[in-house]
Length: 210
Image 1 (cartoon, helix red, strand yellow):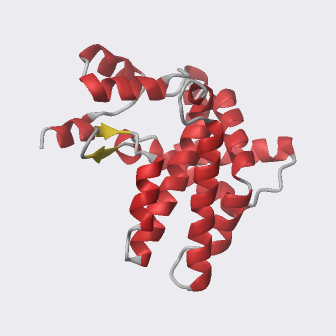
Image 2 (spheres, helix red, strand yellow):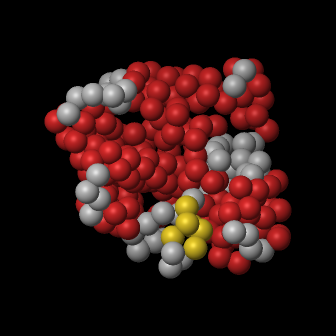
């Protein structure tokens, strides 16, 4: 998924996580952003996790494997009687919305659910995570991180968009469309294009066989 320039920078920093962290810190300073280090650390974790296709895509009964539907996740969270599961689903909703809007924003202009929809849904989901955690402060998750993610969601989208351009992480601006195309038709040529960009499809292929 990286271009040659970015691969070289990753090797210099020693790990993908270090590369993400140093790149985002540099962007924060250039933009004179007031986003906290805790929120930047959250973004590093999000980017590292979603570089694996099986962490981003999931199985839905009607559509099969694909990008999770924000409205579906919202409905699932609202109908869950279990508080922990509700928080988990809302957090994933926010994560998916932030990742997609930040790295694939240009492609959203061609979709019915555009950029504002992703920002509203993602920011709102993080806000609900904060409210749930704030009422019962316990465990390892810091409610204040999710408050900031909610309040600064548009700025974080811009930060990820600039990061993707600077690092050529979005080598193909329609990479998400390429994913979705492969998931619909299992075309070997599409799989080869994804593999050439460093995207592993093995875990998804294994799940599809079951």
